[in-house]
Length: 104
Image 1: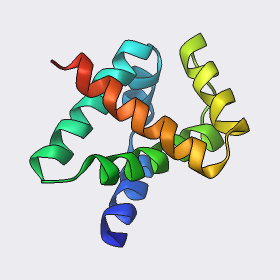
Image 2: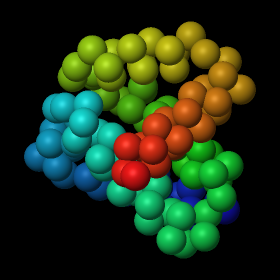
Image 3: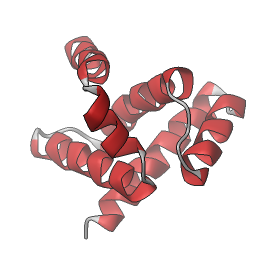
Image 4: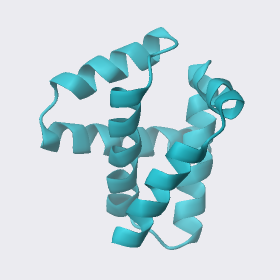
């Protein structure tokens, strides 16, 4: 579990600027990117709980290190900042479910 957390942190740090801009410029692109990562995690046998835990790591990084580029990202960042840890975790679950539903 800790190894996967480190891998997520490393991947977030190593995404090149152009790729990051492409992912974050449009909320649909962000959902597609996250959906791809969720699908990969499911293929690796991860539970929704584990996926939500990793989504929490990503959301924490984005809230602290990236400026929102659209109104959806701005809303998510504001919700993240005011949420308590358990609320942030539930929001991560909701994001995982949303991208899974979009991929159907």
